[in-house]
Image (cartoon, rainbow, N blue to C red; front, side):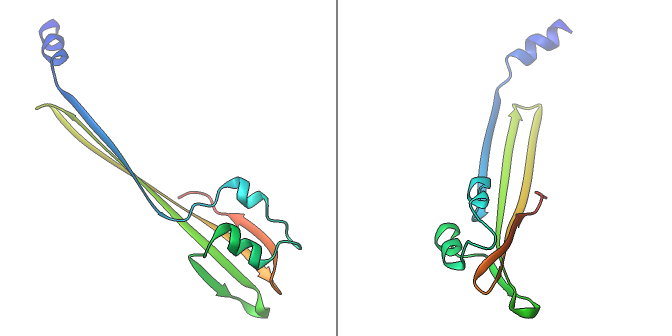
Length: 112
């Protein structure tokens, strides 16, 4: 056991992490600034930017969606013993619903 510990203590350990993001992340603080019945489409567009997609529902209700994806990639190597690779992907969307150009509701889905 002592020999193994001595050999392992001289190992070269190397690691790296990369984070890649796609889309536009809308923070909780920004989302909390939206007031249903008062906030306009113009304000939402100016503050949150162009949505990923826009959908028109029955009755002229419009829903704008902002999608966001974060990919974390971590590599770990212990010279000649272990080579690990871990990838974690999180996606999330924010939705804002409008009627007659005014917000009726805004929400975020749970990360997946």
